[in-house]
Image (cartoon, rainbow, N blue to C red; front, side, top):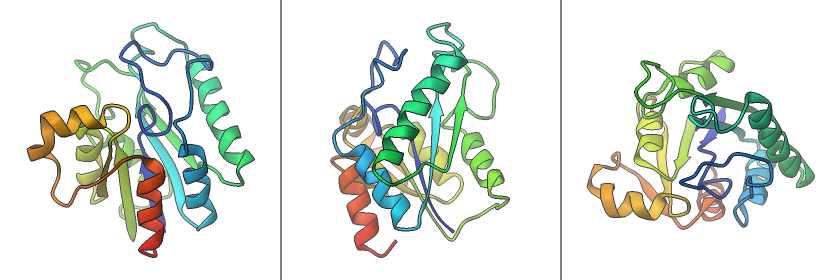
Length: 183
């Protein structure tokens, strides 16, 4: 199985330091929806692993989060693709959970969904060090995009990026690279 795991905010949609709190605020980044559809159409399983502490902070409800995810799924479907699975962590950074990235709990849940401990080829695409660390802990190939918090991550954490991290301007460019390599 070929698997690509995506962070959400800053990779698929616009990010906000004030949190993405509604469907109206959930705005896809240029080319991201089409890139997801391309992966799906090329035979990849596409999953999303996202920290959503706005739930614990009371900024939005699970129903609102579901609506945002429904919007994302519908947009990808309109381009002929699909997102196969979504995992999210609702916890605050100081909560003792195992799912909040940089811990690999969300990745473990995704692998468990497919009843696999390892996959043949797996990429983790994110805009922060914690995204890449979570994926690297489970053997995913790390890809950093410059969208969202990506530029800030590069400026602050470049020397800490997991070994082998590849850097692309956005999700579309990262997907083009994966597909050109025969993924």
